[in-house]
Length: 260
Image 1 (tube, rainbow, N blue to C red):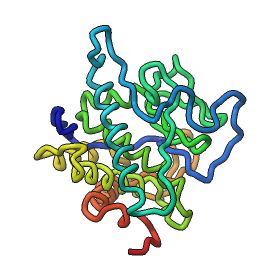
Image 2: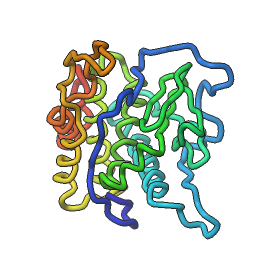
Image 3: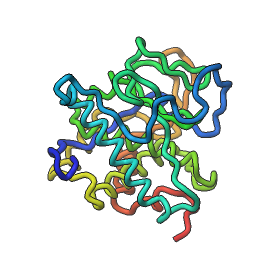
Image 4: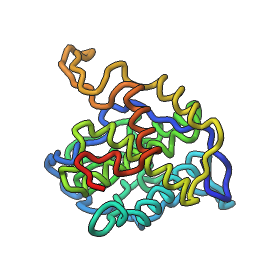
């Protein structure tokens, strides 16, 4: 997958992330000084980090910038086909490398009073912003650079759902985000914003199977600390199924109680 003028990506993959998103209903206290709306410096468009010659510092910067641009452009163009009102893009957390692309623990990003750790990606409902930790996104070096597009589309989907009628928010909110990510990326391909290479689907399936949860969505289990937990992300089969439902049937197939 790439811009029409760019190179092809190799795989569509995603990952089981502990705490990928905070549910939209969560509302912990906000620390003083943290932005309540769009983070400072966010202009509505990605700014890839460049070296003195103007070339992106590495593939992650280019892929991340393209993913943010394409996902935002698709929702901005197609929002009114599915939902009333105006589209609102999420903010991107302030970061040195690029807006939203932070490097923990050197950079500290908070969602309310929660300090976001290394190796994860988040939609924070307090201020409606996204944050992608660099170590997580660099998994694209082994999983394929489509990973970056999937993570961006997945977290963007959490923001989208936070703006909808609560009746359209699924209880299995991570699987809903997978479904909407599939609908978004397929829509971006259809609109000419991205291009899909033959074999991407098979590579996505293999990669997702390798990293998905051992538990089905809703399964109650005991974690390593002896605490009872509930699986929120779902098994490989469930996540692949959700993503494919979105790519095949579009946004409405991801929404409970949707009409038309």
